[in-house]
Amino acid sequence: SFPPPSHPALFLGLPTVLAAMAADLEEVWAGELCGGRLHKFRWDGERLLRVWTPPGWTPGASKSRALWLNDGQNLFRDEDAFGGACWGAAGTVAHLIGSGTIPPVVLLGIDHAGKLRTYDYLPVPPTGWDAPWGQGMRGDMWDAPGGGLDAYLDRVIRELMPWAEKKFGLSSSTADRYFGGSSFGGICALYMAMRYPSIWAGVFAESPSFWAGDGRYMADVASHGVEWPQRMFVAMGELEYTGFRGTDRPGSLQCDEFLRDACVECAGHLAKQGLGPERLVWFIEPGGKHNERDWGRRFPCVLRWLLGNTADRPKPEVGADLPFWTRPSPIAPGRAFEIYAKKEQLKLSTSRGLQVHLGFDNWSKEVQNSAFMPACLSAAEGGSEWLAALAYAPPGATSMNFALTDGEAWDNNGEKNYELPVGLS
Image (cartoon, rainbow, N blue to C red; front, side, top):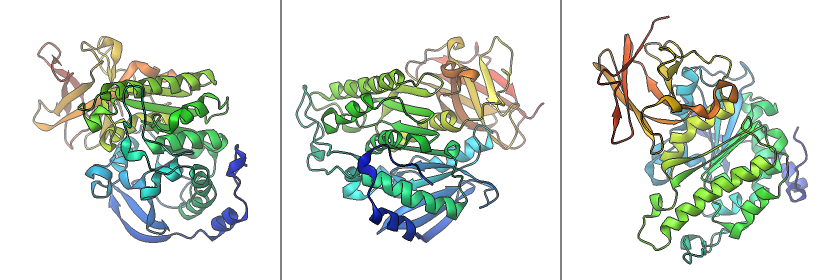
């Protein structure tokens, strides 16, 4: 059962109850994806609920954790996603499960409603963003609708969640439920956290569109109070506006600055309402843009923070003088793993972003490049001190060689490169 909403407008009465009772979604497609299985169910007209179950998952074996996500079209497959590039959500989750970083979790992506997307995700229309430095900085949104947010949240809570928990044997415990979204879907996620704080263990908002709504959304966060889910995550890219729309228009750079400041302000309001570093992670990604690829790149950060296993943190691999450790430890051949780096001990600045360039057995196998991102570990694991990157060890490998770069300078350990063992206990 679900608690009453914390906002009186959410109670929609008998029609909602009947809709919940009648919920019976038709499966229209299913197939293998990243070692797991992706299911598509018709929910509302042609609108789909996309459910990905992880590798080795069987219904009813245990009460599974569930991560609910807005904009389901953009999560799993490039051919379905806006702009032809998806989050790669299934691959990321499979990787982190495989490395032992997070426990198994089922992903449930709720398709947006097309032209009515803003109606579902926003409490008031977005408007076109008249800013002091320019009029109509988002002129494409002048006529976009809003105001259906409460009804959408109610349908998710009272219609989709009971159906999915029964169909897939998902846990009904608050400790096992998570929610999130990006852009307008990120604003929606913040309202989900405010309206229903007691049924979510954690909520994340990627690149929330605080430019919209004439300041209403930030004002609602600021005045909300102290009741939030146990963990919150908020992130923004450095180039939210210009990374998507370019710099030709006067005022474009100010738009980037406004959105960076909005992320800082939102985090400040949450902190004032009792969310300290043990409950809140937020950051601005250097070079980050407003698109699905960038949200997908930050998705491991979200997953570690909301779902991460904290009991099995390995010791540093190569002594206190070198700032690296891996999960699992040691690296296992033929398996996914993560490499962690301690920021304060790195030779390169992290202000522009770092990548790890790695290979195996003296660079003879599987050369890879992977972005270091904030690890978003718990305070007990070192919190914000660590960066993390995802990688894969090929079968038969016995050592990993690696170097770091910020795109211009390199740290290759004095031309010797760094090295970690693979497959040794």
